[in-house]
Image (cartoon, rainbow, N blue to C red; front, side, top):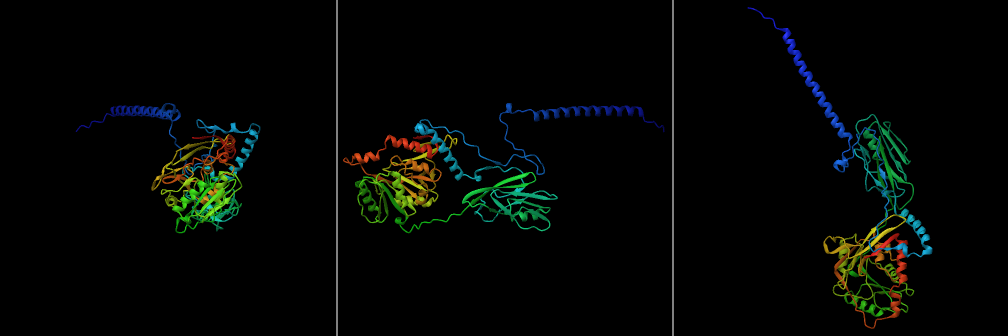
Length: 504
């Protein structure tokens, strides 16, 4: 047998050739990788938004342990800019007496700031919840009585394993406290406005957080505080409402309509029409109480059962009479009617009461007069503080219907025939400065306070005007003059802090 030795030289050549191929392939792979990396970096650094349109609003999440600086979590809502007057609006500053114009503007600005201080608090501040926070805290509904210790619910920390955990809680209008811990935890600032809890045991720390209480240090019936909770670089702010509970004021509605409702009206030199109204009321409701506010120049006595006749100084005006009449109501509701209305078969007070009882958040529900269902909406922009707001009363404007009552819908104001919740209207009141030009102004003052609806299925009649009813004395007081209109515009400027108004 002949043994042939392997050709090592040829094997070496083949091996070197293979290595060259691998090396060439690897070099090309490196080159390709470098090119891809450069392309990716270009996409990263080049802003394509101008080519691709508006970029998506993406907020990057922050890992729990990172120490990237965060934007503050509290913000104030931006101040409103100047409002836009609707076409045809009256510019109110043009109706101010020229010699008093600047002084009125300055007084109004000071009064507006005082009103703002009374009606706003820190609870109106805009708060943000940042992403990936390990902090747990109440976000709504935590309400305390003034000067009363109350546990803060739901405080907690949910963090990964650490050697030590440190939480800081601070407030500005109260003090904080918790239990005295044992040796595995430390508490600093108990009984002060800044509380620091530190422990190596997360369960123990959370037990201490669960027992933290807040006590306001200043008596106030309706204000608020902001609590700041911190852990490492995480921060959260939550509101604390400080409110004195109100004692309920309830009305015994009894068993019949007379214990639910009082009828109210204002009269001036129209006793003939008033008697027709009273006769029509007694035709359908023989026991219901009627309150009359009378500012006639020469009052006539009215002696009827269950009728209260209040005499006023002469010619005090429309809203002064309304205030007097409503102030004497002792029932849950009152029905307002004009002294020249007349009750008909369609004047069903019970149906209006049914709507109000089914919708307890309602304050006023209007009907129709002679099938005329007048109503309106109020479009209001706050505007810039010193310049004032813009208001547009849009006749026949309305919102959506009431659930279960398709014949009723929400609005901002209704006709002079309405059922109202007594306590709600008494809080708003009728401005007695308005003597002859007044109706919509009551609903303007109540915007945001009174929830108003209008219903078409209840109506009242209007007495025809007698041929001999012309009275120069009555017209002198009843028909507004130019001075009355000017005064109302000046009142809107100052009292309502308006720049312009439009009655549409």
